[in-house]
Amino acid sequence: MSSSALATDPGWRREIEEKVYGGQRLSREDGEALYACDDLSWLGRLAHHRRTELNGDRVMFNVNRHLNLTNVCSASCAYCSFQRKPGEKTAYTMRIEEAVAKAREMEGEGLTELHIVNGLHPTLPWKYYPRVLRALKEALPGVSLKCFTATEIHWFERISGLPAEEILDELIDAGLESLTGGGAEIFDWEIRQQIVDHNTHWEDWSRIHRIAHSKGLRTPATMLYGHIEEPRHRVDHVLRLRELQDETGGFIVFIPLRYQHDFVDSADGVIRNRLQERTRMATPAESLKVFAVSRLLLDNVPHIKCFWVMHGLSVAQLSLNFGVDDLDGSVVEYKITHDADAYGTPSTMHREDLLNLIWDAGFRPVERNTRYEVVREYDAPPPLSQRRAEPQDVWA
Image 1 (cartoon, rainbow, N blue to C red):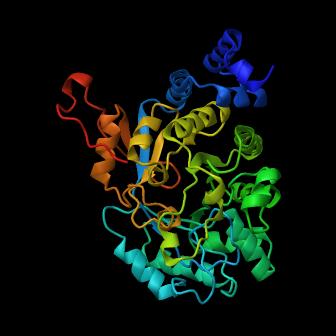
Image 2 (cartoon, rainbow, N blue to C red):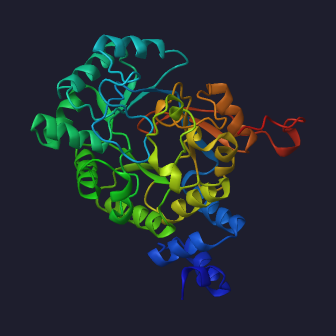
Image 3 (spheres, helix red, strand yellow):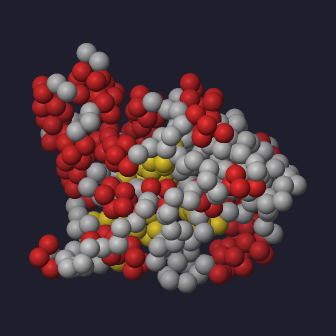
């Protein structure tokens, strides 16, 4: 029976409910049929059950800042508006002292994490990267460093001649506490070969995260959705991660990332985001479905995150009822997607903003650190009878 036929079959629905409420693992066929199901409230109810089993009424966030050391990149990935080539007017690379000064500017509001990703710079030496981390750790000893995608680690192997084991050892010694989850995009080769312009694919991405997990790092994993992929590619992506998680147990959170059209960067006359000619961005309903199905399939990853910068605050708040239990942090100056986004999402949310967003949705805020250890638990949400009399702000 096709996925679309299964999705409307009452017997299949009862079977899925029995699996979810009984704690059984869902199959590839189940995942594809869930994507074919248009009953969003039913999907949300199932995902919310699973999310509540794992995390109760808690919603995690952290106080973090994003720092991009360079936007110069050897690759020209079809979805990317961030990358620049050497000599372009808006290309930049920070000196180590510049990076430290920039990080010091971000230190307020109880900062606990710096999130660092970069272009694959063609001429920067490998030693630049551990030196930056050491300098940042010396300047901000209480701040965790979550740095570099698996694609960057693979690039460091190429430019240094060292294996990933030695690269990670040196970065950890310099202060690295976690890799980032980027570079995953969509693992299926049918799609990946059309969107990615570098040599890091599933084999090397998974190898590097496996090594990181063996060294005690807990890492995120991501998926870029809403471009040319189909639901079956999303299911395949998640099941690869689930299988690797069965082996290592090292993934702490899964983050679906909504592909963005380029509304800002093309103002300089250069179209870098070449996928937008063939795509439409995922609708809010599609995003909620991605969160729900991901939560149901990924039974062995503790957390699902909605990165509100890429989804808008209204969708982020709704996602808390569709399997999500983490809203990332109070980001300032997020360049990776804000170079391709002008649809109304703010570039920053302060701690108080996030607390109110979570309370208004009926959940308990919990501030965490990079390792998902609790920094502070806040009060439970007020009961419905005591919620604000005036409607909350509606965000894009």
